[in-house]
Length: 153
Image (cartoon, rainbow, N blue to C red; front, side, top):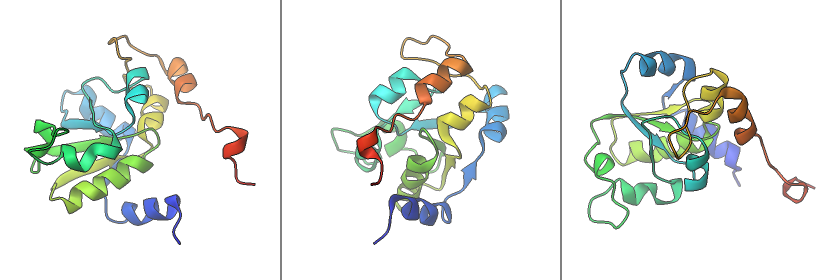
């Protein structure tokens, strides 16, 4: 049986990752590909990279195809476009990028360390209202909230 982390490590062997500081330079210079945030809507609303779109991981594959209720046209028509996949820590995004590669997306990469790394690099973030969120507030929003009952016995 494989664990979640085992699945992530396997996907990392197949998926190219880009660090927040390397991609951040491109982003700040205005060289911005499609930014795909695969976190849940509430996570995205609290904090996200300006210009990113939100497609939760659970509906990603359908969003990448035409003729579904969940179809997202920039994805369904974007198999040849550069796409940076984003999540909180870089784990969901690497799994999503792996799935997208298997679906024929030629230029998909995962943001290593996710939004947490982006925030640590003090790169721009905003909330659902478009208000800028500073790095300290970002740290609070992104803090782990694992409850005692969620810990391994």
